[in-house]
Image 1 (cartoon, rainbow, N blue to C red):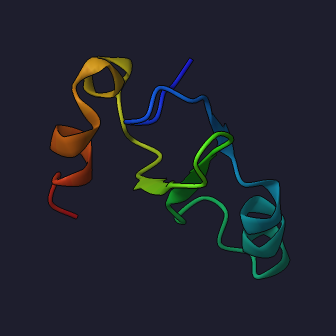
Image 2 (cartoon, rainbow, N blue to C red; image 1 turned 90 degrees about the vertical axis):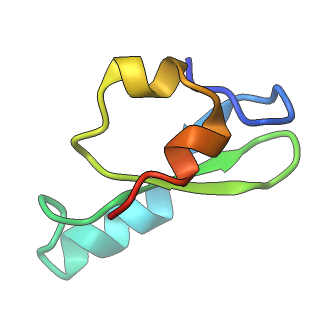
Length: 65
């Protein structure tokens, strides 16, 4: 499970996915994760690997696009 910097669980934003489907860009859009505890948002590329998710969030957030 992906965790926020506050320790809360990050969940995929389903409305973001719905909008990406509507505009036919789901395959290329970045994924929006939101913390259920503090509300922090995190954008991740779909190509993000599980090893990168184990790194501290500051390192993942700083990843160049």
